[in-house]
Image (cartoon, rainbow, N blue to C red; front, side, top):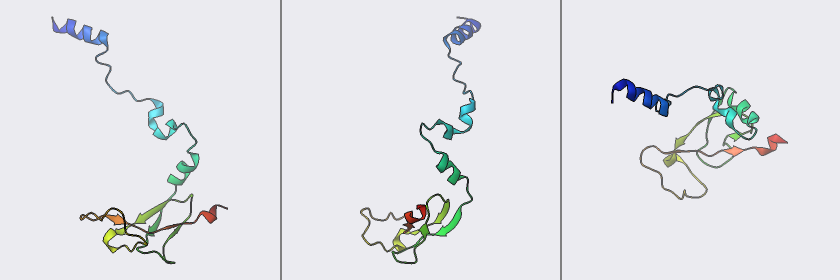
Length: 108
């Protein structure tokens, strides 16, 4: 079969339709949610507040407030002091963890 005939046959069968085409909806994948994510998107557009997470439970742990964006600095899990031992042991190559408090009373 000559190349030109093979090309026409492939084109007719749609073999060359695998080229990705950008659609307007693809510009922002967050527009494809079937539920309202307006609140979450607004939080993600904020400038993050830098917070160093705690290493043990107590009054000095950071208190996070909902609807704010945070950038957390975590510590090595080996330096952590948890109220209960983690069910999965720390991995040897720099596993991180943190202790935080989520202040839900800030919502009322």
